[in-house]
Length: 116
Image (tube, rainbow, N blue to C red; front, top):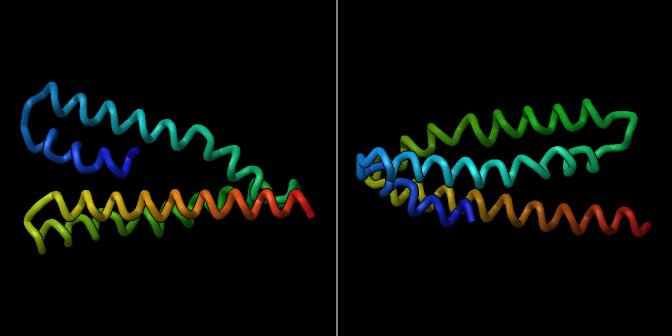
């Protein structure tokens, strides 16, 4: 959902209409909330009790640095190269697809680990 919304959010922001800008940001925040809600439970299930806090914290922080740290640089480079927010929308949709696939594969791995 968030990957598809990336194609709507930039034209809404580019419109300059305060109503559209607020609507674009509000809907995006809703999608982010839907992601962050179950994320804590997912991270908690990834690690055994003895290292749960350290493992979840390290995974979250490294992911934020690697995934979130380079995203603005990549988006800026894409906009400079193509002079359009469409390239940024494609990048965001691709990253959402990678994230979705990762969660699907991780879920299969967790189910296999519980069955063993």
